[in-house]
Length: 194
Image (tube, rainbow, N blue to C red; front, top):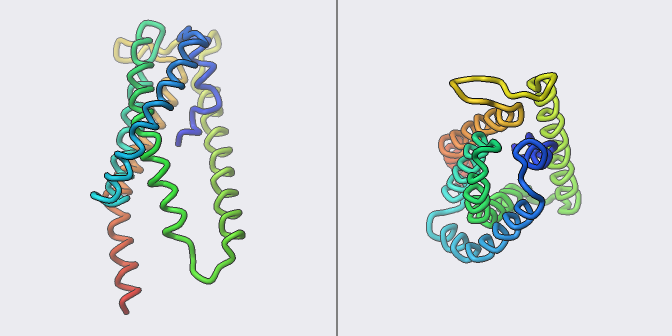
């Protein structure tokens, strides 16, 4: 989902929003430092609440940061440090929980190298497809002169609209994690006990 805007987001920040390279660099560094401070907290949260609940909360934080990005324009640059802080808080937790998926679903009696290679290949294929889809949507939504669309009394640039589509995907993932994964785990446990 993150790949949907990955192909053009930096260009949008630098060219349209007019954020300086320095601000982009500083917010990235601050997000990484915040992430380091929260790693211990995320580990404790996973032990206490379980990885599924923590993963759901991580996707909620990711969706929140993306939701803020929807409203990022040259006049709302103040959103960048807030979204970067949320991303920094979220970074380690998201990594810890999504990495857990890989190991939890590793089949028994299967060559680990082949499984890891296949899994990584699928991730990169979907990153490529997400970036291609996002770029296609951007080209579809972009006005010929690069001017924003007018909707609900606000100016909306094409990258903002693609980000809004990404938020819809995040909401779908949140519903899936909350409703479907616990059902799958219950079915898996029933199969293992029979």
